[in-house]
Length: 195
Figure 1 (cartoon, rainbow, N blue to C red):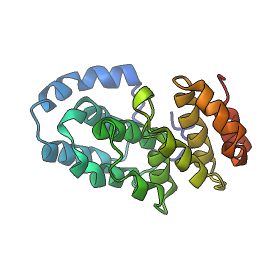
Figure 2 (cartoon, helix red, strand yellow):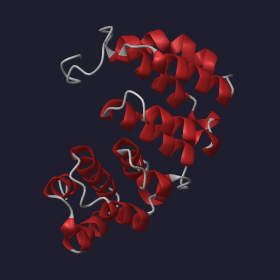
Figure 3 (cartoon, rainbow, N blue to C red):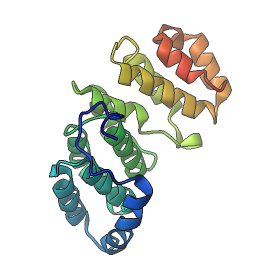
Figure 4 (tube, rainbow, N blue to C red):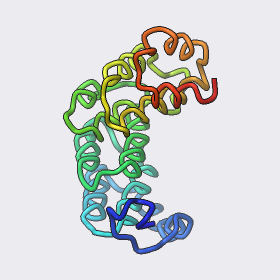
């Protein structure tokens, strides 16, 4: 685990299935928690050094996303700024996407953020939205980040487009043949992977 994450974080060495099994009773108890209590618990877990604690915080937040509202977005984005790497940022993007439930509150600001991890959240927040995806926003966000050289941004552009291509392949194909031609080769390859 330590090597896979490029030696950036300490690990306890607990595999995902065992972590999730151990968290079941805690998640069951957390169902009655308020948003404030959930944030306090997540913040406490995030402060611990081993990566599994951040994963536990994400598991708890993901299980309780219906309790969270757009008022908690600054907190969630704040987590993305600490101990940042693709694993926690992508999980936060999914949680934020669930909280937004089809709106895009705060995502334009996130796309303009100087922190590339926050921009990655803006690019990925619509993953899995299918017909609820705001296609114009998705394409606009991709083009806004098209000239970035950051690997994790280029990869996120491609991933977001590839995910939407499962629902609207012709739209993504047309975008890639038109304005999307300016995307980085990595983004284009990722986007067209299943077209």
